[in-house]
Image (tube, rainbow, N blue to C red; front, side, top):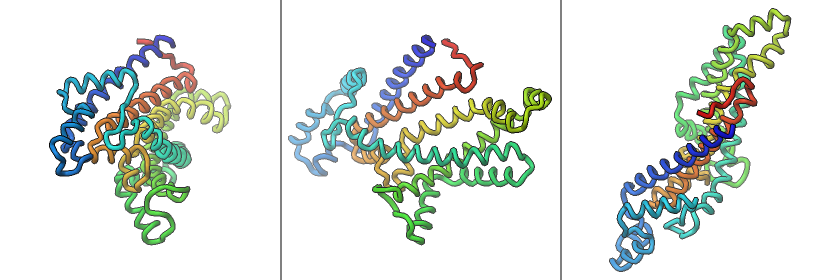
Length: 308
């Protein structure tokens, strides 16, 4: 286990460095000048030189990268160019909203996907199989932003039940969470259906039946337990993607999360903020994947972590 954790730690920091370097290069290729965003469209040359010098934007790209890498090594994300506040503080201000939205959507999708996926697998030739597959197909086919707009038109514009955008209470959470839930449930239902169906035909199920175990015991003690490894993997990936920033949905509903923060930073060409949010997303995604890897032996004791 120690060797496994050491390997994962090295992989984590290497991935963080690689992602940070890529984001640094991409952030410096975004069209536009951050100085113009701060000083306006017609700043004086003296103001431009002074601001470029204070932000170290007048240095060669290699020197800027060396400065960035040094800060990354010290886990210092720097300050925003726009408001001169620490990037970490701004991220921590926006992240709770993303966490609330992501966890709510994940819990709702679990409540929907497990019954649909399990019933579809256990009753292959029944109406449940058809219903679950049709629902999942629709959820996968409709883009998230289009689904969000459709829900806004129905429940906000036509029926006036829910607010269109923003945050401030439970009612503001319903539409963005529902939009994410539909998309998540579609893919998770199919994964659960495939995982459970694959286990039903295994020899150990026939052996359990021959021993006189009930259908309930066979399913919960054996089939579902063995099927949970691939299901947990997908759930971890989905939650990591959600927590890392539901960028499109947050912008459709003007939800003040880190996805909205990232889009705003790109529009303003706030390079430190872009780099900080991207690194935060990467670190969060890697940590969640590590937790999923560590959970495997608890789900299935036959799994042992090979250090290499």
